[in-house]
Image (cartoon, rainbow, N blue to C red; front, side):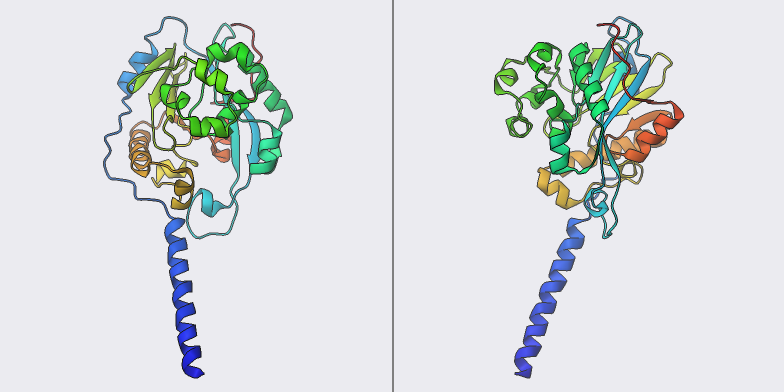
Length: 311
């Protein structure tokens, strides 16, 4: 009997040890390389931002549609038991004539109550939905529901679909678009943007491919009339510390979303190096609640959308 109990304890102890090692491995992220070939050339971006004729945008605003408090271990990584505040914004790039470009559109209340409970702002969601119908262009940083489904669920989508600038990779990612409940007839009718790496979308706005988090992930560069510069990086990182350290999101999250970790870690290295060499460039991480609050308090990003006055 003693021998049986000793063997049982050894087996149980081994299983627990293996489980703990596996857990620690899964809540850590893959290593970020010391060097990266991913290109983010500011000189090229500045040139392309001036390539399209017209006045540069004057402001970036954010509509904070929802907030949540997921476990920090799943969001930031590491063995920890606290929760971390995150935000789900839509961005408005505003031009002098009142026209606008919208970047990302989180969905309505039902999605967040089911997936990310915490807080939902009906007024901000209404402002986002109204802005979609007036935007000169609409882009998404990637094709996940918390960035795209606000477009997919709009009853006015057929009316503004011509202004929805999905890239070819985004339009053809039927797995994630189906998860967003994106209407197939609208998806099939979209003429996608097809480019290699950089695409000058409008005065002051350049799209930059950044696949990895999803096949169609991209970064949006914005240069304002006052020469301030922004990189809206979507979900390349979930928190600015993942850029400044740099470190990747936990493997558990990476596996769940089927990320290409080699691409994401390469992009993180480039963003880290760019931020260190160019501290005046504002890197905007979609879900970093503290960063967005700091940007709003400093006036770098406006809190809430401005009403449309032009087209």
